[in-house]
Length: 135
Image (cartoon, rainbow, N blue to C red; front, side, top):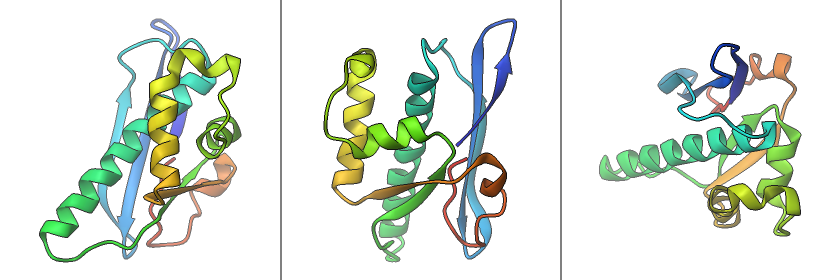
């Protein structure tokens, strides 16, 4: 997921994601957040939650088309904090205010629905063709 600078007037972050199949985009979104995040980690995890919900929809669509998708789907992101929280079963004091979203993301990782891999922001745009991408 790419978290752009956001809008200074509202302090709301902007995010985008692109899912690709065989090198072609099949789902994408760019949107300004509806609420102000209290921390970068909260904003990143909120966007990751939205991206994983889109993964669930894509999995359901392909299942209905009798073309099931192998799990886990690899997501690429550029925020180490949200990736660490997604893979760490421990609850940290600084994450209590977004507990439900953290648990949802962790549940999807644990169930092997998604795998989340860190790439720096510049590398995100060079991800191999066909790879699902969360910027």
